Structure formats: structure tokens, C-alpha cells
Length: 348
Ligand code: ADP
Image 1 (cartoon, rainbow, N blue to C red):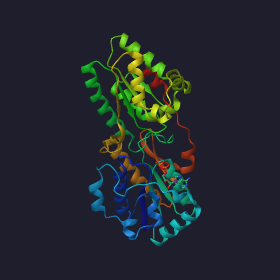
Image 2: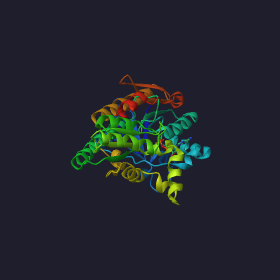
Image 3: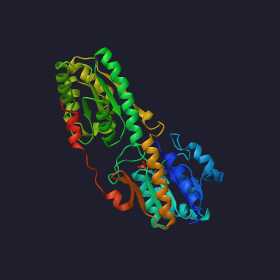
Image 4: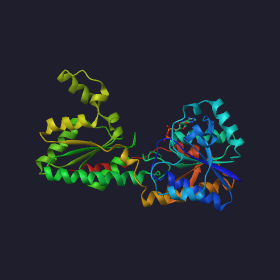
């Protein structure tokens, strides 16, 4: 191949820029030129007035400078048009016109579906799992997950320090969409006493019982770590019953959140539980050494595959080393939740 493209798609994650840098370096090594496609698949549709706003030649010296920066230099966005077959044909025409012979797609499972569609139209693609959520079963870690967990552990430690000073519990919400891995590892890494995840059914009463027991045992400063997607796994009767008993008429979203959980624990456990939603700081941190290393290896392997005419693959980590497998096979794998670690964290 003489020219390849690279794009970042879906939610941003720390390490995306490092992966773009690695792709640029490997492309230079193999004597290929590199086109950066902007705002995910939107760039392939060339909707802007100036072509540089959609696709631009990447200069390795510039890319070297962005390697340790969080966010994504190429920008990222959803591209709903890409779900339409005729728009994908239009994209492939633009890709061919630019002389791009293969694409490295850095994103999550949605982006992988888009990559598979491009492969079906004759554009070889290789995926790198850029998402903090760690929700892709085929890889031990996704790119950005380690940084997100480190960010949470730092913040939870700070929150625990003030909880300790005031002898009051903390409820901390972390990201991860429908996957509890960030919550699980952040809870284990920070010594939190209670962890709530989407993979395990739970109820406010059961959390309150556990917190009350911790308080009775002399630990009034316990930390509850809750994954943002955990509300989907709450026993439905728990909050319905509460609302009915108290004659409340409010929308689900106003009730099923971390502030409400804190409020409930406050009343049920007679304590001063304080909520914190960690939010986007988890996505915007400088990539950890591990994520930077993974990005470097993954970018290099992706370019090697394209150079050898191998497309329709994704890069992952197995036994701590980078490997690749077909996109379809990767997407079929089912995630296994670490129930043993979950039980251990929640042991009181
Ligand atoms: P993530 O890659 O983080 O899972 P999304 O699910 O939002 O993020 O997907 C990112 C983009 O991938 C979408 O905006 C769309 O452009 C493309 N995409 C997702 N699913 C498909 C699909 N089934 N077919 C074609 N393109 C898709």
C-alpha cells in the first residue's frame, strides 16, 4: 500500500492520539503516506467546504507532539449517515479518490461495525479499541481504560481523605456505560467498601443494610462506588415502592441517580453520605504509561497488517501482548464479569 488513512470515532479516550502517532510512525517506516480523516466517519463523506476539514495529510513531526496529549487531534463524532448503505458507497468513492488503500479505525464496537461495512465494500480496515469502557470481550483492556481507572483511583482517594476527616460516607459515580469494569477496578484500587455495577442486581435497601453494618462496625467513612450504568440493574420494585409510599410524582431520571442514592442512604443509615459524580475527567486525562505503550504497539501492528494486505481485523491484548483477530469474531465474544473480585470488594 502507498497511502493509508486513520480516524478516531465514538467517544474519545486517552491514548487515541498516541495511537495516531504510532500509525504515523509505522506508515513512515513502511514508506506510506498517511491521511487523517476528521470527526470519525463524517470525514469520509467530505461534507465540509474545504477538503482539509475532512481529510488532511498528516505530518509525522506534528503527530509526534500530540502523542502524550489526551483527547483526539483528529476530533471524533457520531455519524448517523454512515448507517445508510448509499452514504457508505459515497464514502468509499471519496476514500478511493483520495488514494487511500486501507484505514486504521480507532473506536469502540459501533465504530467496528462501520469498519466491517467498509471492508465489505473493498476498503481494508483494522480496528484499535479506543474506549475507556473496557466493554469489548476479545481484549483484556481497551485503550484508555487504564488511564480512566487511574483517574478514578486518584479522585476516590482524595474523596476518602475528606470522608475520613469528617467520618461520613461517600458515594462516587464512575463512567463505563453498561460495563462495570471501571467501577470494579477503581473500587479495588482505592479500597472502597461497596461497589455497585450493571452486571449484578442490587437494591437501595441492600446497599443501605451493608452501609449500616459498616457504620455499626465502626466505619462511618465507607465509600460506595457506583457505575453509571448500574441503575439498569436495580431491582425495579425498590424505587417504585419508595415513590408510592411517599406519594412522589417524578420522572425516572430525576430519581435514579447518584444524588438520590446518597439521599436515601442519608435517611436509611442516619449518616451524612455525600455524592460525587466524577464525569468527563476520566476521559480527559493524559494517557497512562500502559495506555501509551498499548497505543504504540497497536498502531504499529495495525499498519503492519495493512502493509501485508490483511484487513477486517481488530487489535487487542491477550496475556499482556498485542494480537489480532477478525472484526466479526471479536464482536461475537461475550464479556465475562469478574464476580469473584466483585464479591471480595463487597465483603464486610
Ligand atoms: P463507539 O464506536 O464508541 O461504540 P458509536 O456506537 O457511537 O461509538 O459508533 C460510532 C460511529 O460508528 C457511529 O456514529 C456510526 O458512524 C458508526 N457505526 C456504528 N454502528 C454502525 C453500523 N451498524 N453500521 C455502520 N456504521 C456504524
